[in-house]
Length: 341
Picture (tube, rainbow, N blue to C red):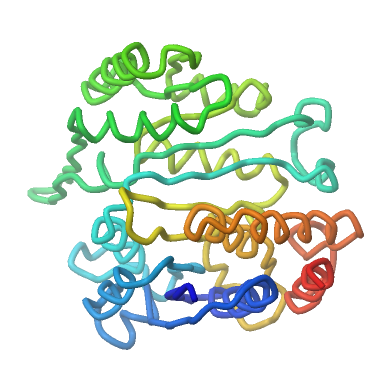
């Protein structure tokens, strides 16, 4: 029986994670171990990620994370603990260097996207983001009225994330950088090109500057198969790509390393403004649970069943508030569970 550590986090996190457990239980038998994380952990323990929680995650078969953060913990004090620090520490502690964000607009929601239907139809892409290097993990300091953030990448870090992208590609990898300005991007482009020529010559490779890629993502999203990029660019581009689906409430993600448990979470935030009202969209949480089944536990049939149930619920007219409807969290959950019965 697979053992899953659950991290409800903050805001709407506990609500959507409880709903996701119901969906998981409809397709398999699992044991769960819940821990405080993010702002909730700061309030309880003074830190967004305790050693106890990290060790529990290391022992798990997979980790299901809901959402972290909120204005309660916002501060410009560099010494103040922040919920998002827990995410960085968790990724580093579990060696999760690859973040996978599939973007496949559901046909029933094509008209919910800000893009025209004929631009969006047929889009099916994957953002592969390097997760443990770059400016997010570089040295940070503030002194004499100035702030410094160091962006660093090593060849080995780029090689391993490039291999993830090439293995996932069906036809093409688009490697995104800013090599006309950044030295780290020049190294990135060199290493990706070498990995391609030596190990994956049958996959098409193209290089794009991040500003060009950002424009093309909304002008011609069907062009992309796999987008490979570094930590900060991947963070921004994957959120942009999420809006192709019509709502951040529809996008799941998987964070993986070399063996060991992965972390599976929706891309959206904690939405503290609607927390406790029972109106949060749980669908990205359900799709993250599907990724957990597929990528974390090797349960392909069960993952496909959850994804199909979400599609059928939307085809049947299910719409939460962020999708222009009035369905509650409970009603969305019941609609998906009905497709699993």
